[in-house]
Image 1: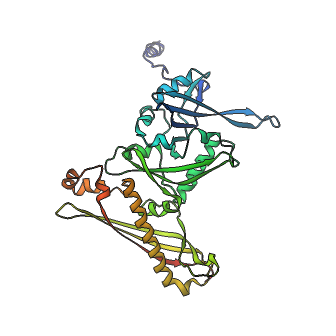
Image 2 (image 1 turned 30 degrees about the vertical axis):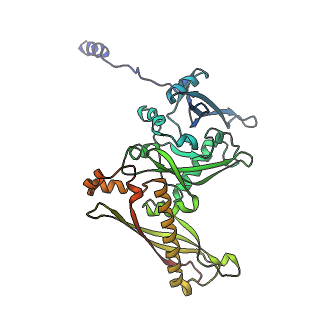
Length: 371
C-alpha cells in the first residue's frame, strides 16, 4: 500500500514535456540569404527542401526546393512574415548555409546574425559566404552535380577548405572573430552564371569592422592562408618560373606543400612604430614539371620559387593593407604584449601603418618517381 501511495504522490511533482518542437510542424530551412533592396530594406531569402515520391520508384524520394523571400527591417521580422505565408513553422535548426549579397556585406553583417546566435536551436555548423551580385539569385541556379543547390554550394565550400583555397569557417567560429578588435576575418567569395548553371569560388572577401572592404583572387588565397598559418589538408601552386621557353607549358611548375612553417614576430620601437617579420618555410613536392629534369634544376628552382612566392606574398600584404584587413591577428599580439602601444594607436588604422618584412623560403624535397 505504501508503495502505491508513494507512486501517486510523486506523480504530482513530475515535470511534463512542455517545451516540445514537433518535426511534423516544422519546415526546415536549408539556406538563408541576405540582400539589400533599393529602398535600403533587408531582403531575407530562404530555401526550403521538399520531398516527393518518385513516379518510377515509390521507394525513392525526389528532392526539390522552394525559394521564399520577404522584405523587412530585421531577420526575425522577415521570418515572421514568411511564417504567415506557409502552413507550418520555419525551423533553422538544420540550416547549412548563410549567404550575403556583396552590397549587403559592405554594411555591418553582425546585426542579421544576432538572431542566429541568440536562438539555442540555430545550427552553429552553417557555412558562410559572400556572393557577387544577389545572394537570393544564386539559389535559382540549376546545377548539374547536385539536385539541391544548397548541397552543391556546401560541397563546393567544404572541398575548397581541404585544399586551402578558403579557410575553415562556420557561424560558430565566426562568433568570436567578429567581435575581436585585434583580428579581422575573411569569407569565401562566390560568383555564378545563370545561363551556364555554374557556381565558382572566385576568391576571398576581406572584412574590416564587420564590413567587406576588399577581396583576394583565388590565385592568391592559398598563399595568404599559409601566411596566416591556416593550411588545410593540402595546398598546391602552379607557378611561372621561366619566361624564355619555346613551349609555354615548360615555363611552369606545379608543387604540393608537404609542410608549412610560418613564423611571425611583432616588433615595436621606442617611437611606437610597428614592424612585423613574417617568414614562411615551405617543403614542396613537385607534381608537374613539363620542362623535365628536377634534380638537375633543383637549386635554381628553389631560388626561383622562393623569389616568386616572396613577391606574391608582398603583393597580398599590400592588398590586405589597402582593405585594412588584419587577417594575421597582429592586433591581438599588440593587445597582449604591447598594450601601451595598442592603446595609443588608432585601432581602425593600425594595420595600414605596419611595416612588413616578408620572406618565403621554398625547398623541393620530392619530385615523384621520375627525374
